[in-house]
Image (cartoon, rainbow, N blue to C red):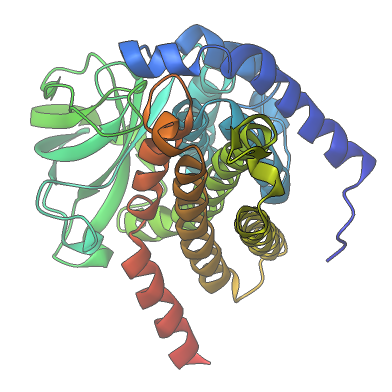
Length: 379
């Protein structure tokens, strides 16, 4: 794998960086404080091609790679973690429709999704099935040309606001082979939403339950075939883990840069903080851990692009390593600010809050270790 970005990749990276600096970073604190979901700003990101990064061009996608996506999400997250993460979720849902949906579904939904005229949510987790995703209970019973859905999904980003819900539901027997993937449109009779959850981080995006009560969804809205849902979900999560790892990089980088600036400004005991060797060593370790995490994300993204058989394991490794390191980097950056880091006048407390969930979603970091060990035992 080359360690030097191509001219095209540097342009993609710069475009995302400039957008994050001008359209995300100046507003991130307000969005967090007031719980504002910045849909108009995300539509501006879509104009740059960031809403269909690896979707085919005939429906408005950018046809970029997973490696390109990692570059983009690191930059966007340096501006606003929660917004970057939501754009990642939207991309995953759109990719599932593009990769596994029939032509009617693709042509009907993806032009509006790649422009973010419509926004999408991904619905896998349930109140009773988190890490054990294959045990999901939401039922979809065939009734002529419709499925009738009953059940609920939990912790769904965009719930109540999104126009499209890509849902994993049980159409068959217990276990992974009984799961299928359905597209549910907002406004469908029997579809409702729970109250907005009160969260530690990612406060600018709504999160709630998605509830199905005799919700009738056309059979034509199936993505793939019956029984394909779990495979689609797991393939989507490989890319999702790279994206959330890349988001972790961006937020950690922003925290590190803030700490470095502060150390050059703050004086104690008659010297700038940057003159204390103990603090220099701390900064050096933070920078080293960030660089190592970035290399793991890039390696996993490149493996997924070339369809390396080790890609699932590498994605799990990279997500675990990057999200753990990013949380530590942000926490150390807060510590370097002392009491000021604990105040909302500085972005560090928001970075710490936003990053905490990265060790939980797209598969907890404990589940990442399960995946890694399982893949090792197969070799």
